[in-house]
Image (cartoon, rainbow, N blue to C red; front, side, top):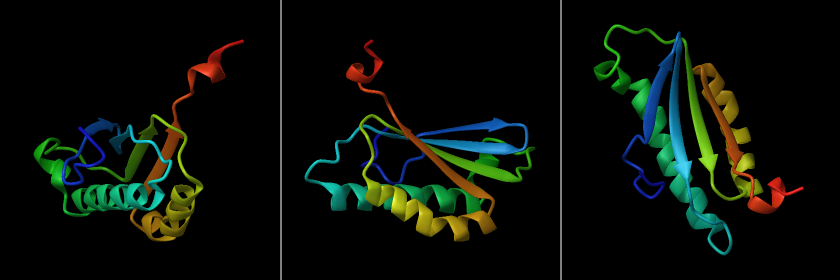
Length: 113
């Protein structure tokens, strides 16, 4: 899967009353912040529609969820513009019980002692 395929749900799992959706972002941010943010926004909108329209019911027909988590795993450190975008969307998402969590992979230099 790819962040550039905004119409595709990368991965989905259920944990008790939580539906967890994963976005994997392998792209660098340098020189492409605006385009990268737009791709993430499009991907997130697809995920939110998937939740709102019950797209997960095909995979989990007998499950009822009260919480939805969209987890984004970045290969590279994310841009602060992305963090601001998530903060702006948070009040609307909270009303829908949707939480966005994200983290960047540690670079090899971060793990060396």
